[in-house]
Amino acid sequence: MDSAAHQRYGRHYSEHKLWNKLRRTIRVAGRELIEKALLLYFVLRDPRAPVWAKTTVIAALGYFIAPIDAIPDLLPGAGFIDDLGVLALALGSVAASITPRMRERAGRLVAKWFGDLATIDDAFDGPVIEVEATVVAREPS
Image (cartoon, rainbow, N blue to C red):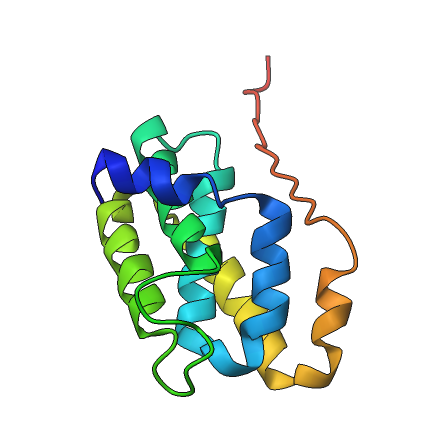
């Protein structure tokens, strides 16, 4: 995406809007699109990801969230093709920032959401809280 696209679609991004879009579209957008959106979200939340990668992610997720894009999301069967392409392109661009842990988390969430769609609203009850710890061992004195 060029800088004009970053500006145009980046303004549509917010974490709240992303989770609302995921909640509203999960049944029609499909597993692949949802997993790509989650991977990009995890890159965005990673403090180690470079600014250019986060800018790319914001623009791609902003495009996904935007109410008007190249192919309207309301078109059955075709409405998310452009979104999938934009998310896939962004993932390719930021691939070096994607960790195995991000892939595992996105995979777990997608498996949970698509395994039992009746409980999908339960997954959105509150903020996602992530805790990472590093264990450092000292040599005995």
